[in-house]
Amino acid sequence: MVPLWPRPRPGVQGAATVAARAGAFVYAAFYTGLDAVVGIAAGPAVEHAAAGANAGPLKRPLYEVGESLGQVSAPTP
Image 1: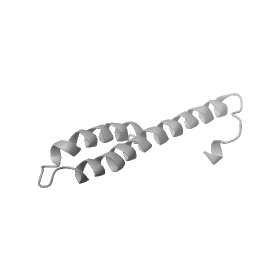
Image 2 (image 1 turned 60 degrees about the vertical axis):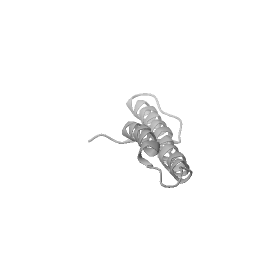
Image 3 (image 1 turned 120 degrees about the vertical axis):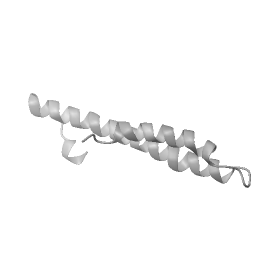
């Protein structure tokens, strides 16, 4: 964000700055959501599962949500 910090200038350069800020915001929000769902929620869900229980049904929905969030925040080739 530091290169984008100054107030946007009028014209194409300002529009590019605003678009870059919006992209940075979307990336930060969705990637943080991915980390929270997969890293924070899935770990305790599996950890607190009954001993010997299959963890797949517990973590699969969380990983699917994390994957969806990651797809939004990932750059497309």
